[in-house]
Length: 84
Image 1 (cartoon, one colour):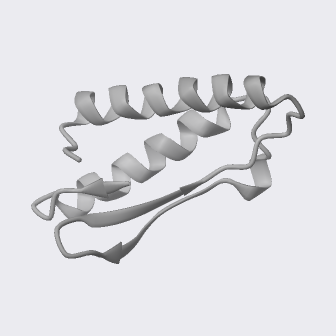
Image 2 (cartoon, rainbow, N blue to C red; image 1 turned 120 degrees about the vertical axis):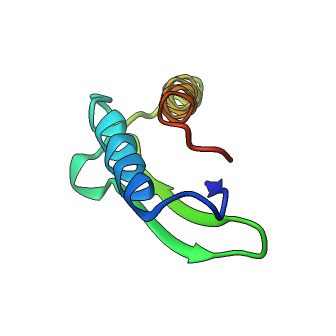
Image 3 (cartoon, rainbow, N blue to C red; image 1 turned 30 degrees about the horizontal axis):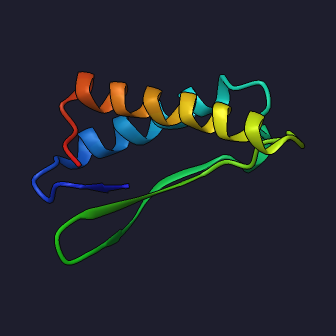
């Protein structure tokens, strides 16, 4: 995820924790492999790594669960004032 450079460090940390929490609520997420962390500076964004393997074997189910999580992340960003 790429967020605005003017995002305060405290908000970055809170957002990362919230995203990790949201992902951890997904039953199919491999809990010990969820990664969410501020991991770099790009030309126009601060980058946040979001990695979460899902233990599902049906591609459509995987896409559906990913979409649910992605929409929850967008909603959390909106609530917290995080701008992509």
